[in-house]
Image (cartoon, rainbow, N blue to C red; front, side):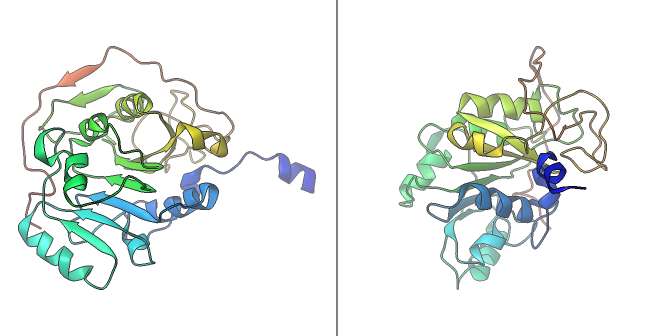
Length: 262
């Protein structure tokens, strides 16, 4: 292959840079690639539910490497483990369950603990209410949001559960609410969506997923093991999702990850 042919090749999907130090599905490497592209401003990150700080964490690879920020965990025993694990690092630990409103709304919690608005990364993983936390954001504008989605729902189906049911939301539902907050979807792993602010979106031209509605392939932005029926083409910029009538399902309630015992 000539140099000119190499230069013309489409960029790799961002998930191709996935590696795990503490994360579950390559998020550590994808996050590193994000900030290689857009650079850092504050090296401040927020994560909830944080467990003990390490367990399947999307940010432990950062705060063990000089980043600072906030780890939020509601489970009392895990919070004790969290405080112990981060004692030698620049971390603020908050023992709370984040909600979409009231005194435990994310922005209210951050205000009470003196956390500023200059945030590079927000990671949301609370097994169900993730959609509603993004919806609740008013002033906080992290440059990158990592948010768990429900991988058993076809990604192009706009579907979420009622608040408090811990069922989760599809990629399409999360993309819709993220766009309402001026974010664009640029990458997927097997369980997480990655969003960037509109102002940074042009830097990812060619990397981001485009929705084709066919079965996933090894060239997908998701792993070939992914079970949804949506391919993410590497060569196209994303187009708007075809959004059907939004369905909200009442589903049986069970305890969120932040509440369950190990």
